[in-house]
Length: 130
Image 1 (tube, rainbow, N blue to C red):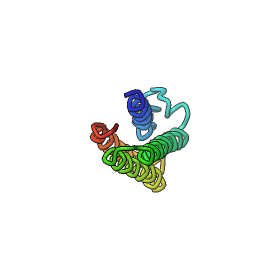
Image 2 (cartoon, rainbow, N blue to C red):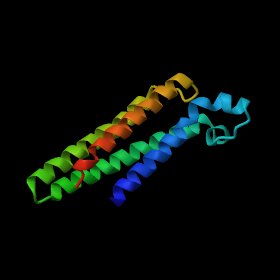
Image 3 (cartoon, one colour):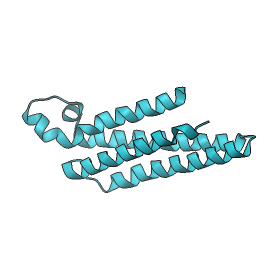
């Protein structure tokens, strides 16, 4: 329960930070000093990408390790599958981001919506976590 709270808490922070990246021009015009306006689009985009990639890769490694140490076969298989999903999600976060220009609002928005899809898929996997 604690680890899932940490996971979704960090993921929520990433989504909250990414939300403002595509809107920097409008925020600057409206004199709204969002974190993206103060720190910069590229920097926020890079930090959130690295944070989410690391989160998924660490989670994946933890699940795989837990699967290797499990004594019950179904628990081992479930943990290994969740580990593989987490590793693939981490790799996909990185790969998708490589094709995005942080200053292109449309591209960043598409990436942002992709992160939401990963969030919901992760949430759907929650009942299988043991």
